Amino acid sequence: VSQMPHSCRLFTRCEGYWAELIQEDLTLIRGVGESVSFSCGGTQPCSGSYIYWYQKKNTETFKPILRFDQNSRVAYDGYGHPQKDDFSALKTQTGCELKINKVKVDHSASYYCIWDYHIFGTGTRLFVTAQSVVKPVVSVYPAASRVHVEGSSSLLCLASAMFPPVVQFSWKRQKNNGPLEDLTSEEQLDLRELGYSASILLLHQQEDSSYKYSCSIKHEGGTVEPPLRVAPRKCSG
Image (cartoon, rainbow, N blue to C red; front, side):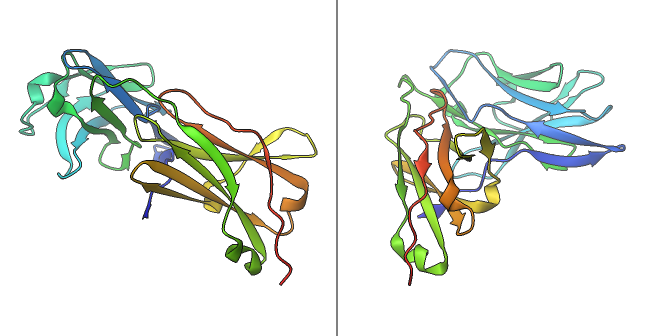
């Protein structure tokens, strides 16, 4: 099983305040000949800074596509990318977009925006196919009992049978029918295998008895949120 890095929003310091790059789309599906745009937004984008766009295919290294000047709104594409004429860039209210007017099969890849070489967006993966979006089937289970003897318990959230096969997990908890609280990613481990993705949430002994837990899965077909789950009982030995 391969560990899947957490999808996160990344920050960098810029002229006295924090700048943030956000790529909201995990995946996009397009047919041959259709157009597609990849968004790269930010909170408090830095004045006078550049946004770089890179393409990453599964078996290849990162390839620079173009550099976009947020002030002059001019794109420089002299990096030697073999498909450079297929791409254009434009400014938005919070950042910029990379656009392909007519998608080809060879455009299938992940696309990342980068702020001044310092910080990466989380990337958007493009699937060029006629296949339709299929939302994931989601199940939540108690994790293996061998974890319980360590004074903790855990829950497993499994997403399968989806297309595209890319999801983002997040966990929430609820105490005594109160409001839902977001949990930090430090307590979860995300895994990806062929045909499914999973997230394991570690529960501490002092907190799990009074909480119910919810796993939320972000997917191109929409967000899936199974019912709240009571934490599993721990073994006493």
